[in-house]
Each structure stands twice: as structure tokens, then as C-alpha cells.
Image (cartoon, rainbow, N blue to C red; front, side):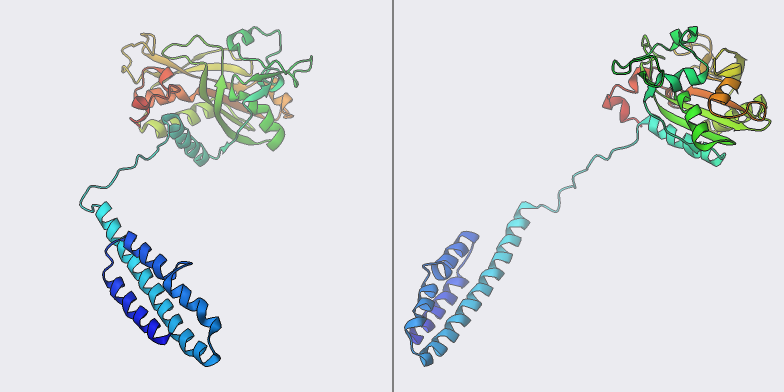
Amino acid sequence: MLEELRKLQQQIKSEVERIKNSQELRDLEVKYLGRKGELTEILRQLKDLSSEEKQKVGKLANEIKTDLAKKIGEIKGSVSAAKESKLLDLTLPGQQFTLGHLHPVSRIQYQLEDVFSSLGFIVEDGPELESEFFNFEALNVPASHPARDMQDTFYIKEGKGADPHNRLLLRTQTSSVQVRAMKKYGVPLRLIVPGRVFRFEATDARHETTFTQIEGLMIDKDISVANLISVIKSFLKQIFGKEIEVRLRPGYFPFVEPGFEMDLSCLLCGGKGCAVCKKTGWVEFMGSGLVHPNVLLAGGVDPKEYSGFAFGFGLTRLVMMKYGIDDIRLMNSGDLRFLNQF
């Protein structure tokens, strides 16, 4: 049997040297190491040999088996490498992968958060599905108030009953976080609240049913309109990188007294008049004013000791001014031709 093994060893060595592809390698592996392979059959016969023969034959058979397995492994590696090198042409240009990027609204929102954080404001969040109490009543807008007609919104059927805490709607303004924040943090307080709001709007180039708004609130002792104007001018300059012409005019908002409308000189037309500014040269930017005493009381703050200012503006309109976008409806369109410009 030793002679038979030595012949088999030479035969295997000769065949291994002639292998050219992976199919021939598999055939060789099955021929000698398979369940019915020649080397496997010899190993099965060891049980019929004497102890002395078992030692000699077994040692040689195991050496042949180990050496063959090693050779097969080496050849597999070289065949795979050769196959891969044929499939991969290293002279071809690499494949370019498209990277995602921030939406223009998100980009300006993050810039504003950084600006206001540097001014000592915290960034707060609130629920988009809001109670009627925090969205209206706590902001000095009772159920019978005509100002509700200006903010007709989407009500939720599940929110029923006489208690305004239980009546639910999609919030019309991030101002709803004002009283929540006063109850949570107390005073003095500086915060901004960015987030989506929802209104039943007739859409056009400057109006949309869903848009992003930022609410600002500052409450402390001896806060005046001068503080309001200073903060607004400061963040506008940092966002646009230059002084922006603004104008204040009286405006009515139930949750501030006195109230102001602030307009920006239209940056799309340079004040000459266009569809966005309705040919006036000015774009309505934000509502603002000093916080109404009733709102301070709703937040558990004494209006005789503290005062504050509040402002709210459509972040989407600010983005339009920043990037020269002439139609607000593009923001939520999902049109990659629009989004890939940013």
C-alpha cells in the first residue's frame, strides 16, 4: 500500500501542475478528496492493516492529504485573483456617487439657530399637533375672537369637547410654544422656536399651506421696543452679510401690545416691484411687538414686574430673499431640478 500511495502522490503532483482554471481544480478536489475519492478510499482501508502498517501508511496518507489541501488553497487564491483582475479595469475612471445635501430651508434654519444662540437664546421645539388652548386661548385669542378667521386651519376630529386643552389642530404658528416655555423655564427667558406650521391658504407665489416659521421671545425686566429692533437688525445683518433696509408699521396681533409689522426691502427686485412683493418693493416679513400682559399671566409671569417682546416670521420667505427664489411652492415640491441648485 505504501507503493500505491507513493504513485498516487506523484500522480497528484503532476495533475496539480497542469491545472488552468477553477473547474479543473474542483474536479481534482473531488477526484482525490471527495467522499469516493482515491485518497479517501485508501484512508478507509487503514482499519484493515496491522498496527505497524497503520503507522507508516497513515503518516504518508495524511502528509499527501495535507499537502494536497494546501496546494488547492493556493491555486484557488491565484485563480480568484486572476479572475478579479480580468473583471476590473483599473484604467477606467471611478464611479461618482451622488452625495445628499441640506434643503435650503434647513440650511438657513441652522444658521439662524447659531446666530440666536450667540445672542443667548435657546432653541426650543413644540408639537405640530397642538391643543387649541396653547395655539389660541393662551395667546389672548378666545374662541369668539375675529383673528381666528385669519388663521383658519386644519382641525382634528378626535379633538372634541368644551375644554380647549382637548381640542386638537395642526398648529398655525410656533407662537404656541410661548406659554409652554414660560411654564417650563420661568423668567427671564430668551428663546426661538423653529418649526412647521399649517394654514388653510390659497396658494400662490408667496403663500403655501405648509411652511416653516420661527418664533422669537425675550422676557426680562425693562424690555422695550428698542431691544426688539436691535435683535432683529442684528440677526438680519448676520444672515445676509449686509445691512438690510426694513420698515416698521403698526400692526394688530392679539398676543402683543403694541404690535408691529416689519417689512424687508424686496431683494428679488431691488425694491422696484415684482410678483413676490406685489409691485410694492417691500415684502411683509414678520409680526412683532411687546408681549401682551394676558399672555404673561397665562405663562405664570407677573406683567407688573416683567415685560418682553415676541416676533414671528416665515423662515421660508427669508430663504426666498436669501437665494432669490420667486415662488414659495418650490420649497415643498420635491423637484430635484430645484433642490440640486443648493
